[in-house]
Image 1: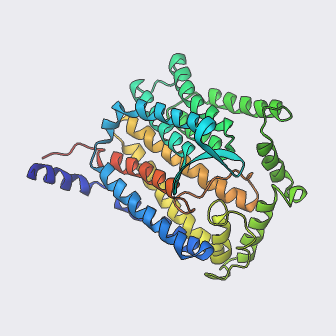
Image 2: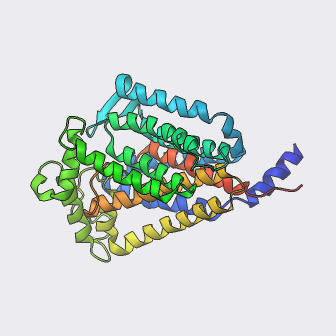
Length: 366
């Protein structure tokens, strides 16, 4: 028993406390913004989810991440079954996509589970392949595992989570050393595919409307373009220093202000300086994750970190971009900041895995 405690003590010294504290500060930044938008009740709920997430993180840190290897196939195929149930049996339509399973007071976004399962499965397979991604057989196996959940998410049709999964795969494939010509060819093929299906029944009207409004939001001001226009107005009114806490004028006009458009609220109330502070915190988080990825002692741990940082980076760029009008509106929330319990919990499970890899990057001597 005492040896076990001693081991834990040594491991805790390896924990990246900077990364953990930074993540908490980002969440608290979000809680303050949520309070200013929808009041005390939702802010308290988000704090409860934060506490629950930290408890789950604490539990995960006690287990060597390599033990997960045996359970990843179960988790992956379980997430596929969850997506199928979501799409054809249990799913509820929210904002045009059948992406949620409602279990009493709890809403589960099946794609959130799938994106983590996808990351872990690709990391596991690459580790088993010794990173040999340019072997044609290995490449097609990995691509197959990537396409299964992505196709099911397209069916929902959730454009945001489809893009998230795509960039997770892209990040992992690039970091694993996939030939750059293959990556470029894949991107060109994707653009050609979208062009070909644009006017066909295969392209969901919901996606087409959002992409069209991105190109010309004024034309769709009363429908798909409304969110872009109101978010831009809110951010513009914040200028450099912001209007001040609880002094936002655009809150009642910005759709999904506490979820998709929370960055617009931050931009209005805290201004350009407030956004820089938030981006600085994200920058610290990215740096710590990438550092752990580089120092990981195996491909499995490294690829877990790459997949997770790819998700965070894309989600942040997309969320900020869609609110200032340089990216299409996809419904992607701002990680750790936007309101949502299942999303926050999934994000912390992801960060817990990164912290776990960092704690065990070198052998602990007793």
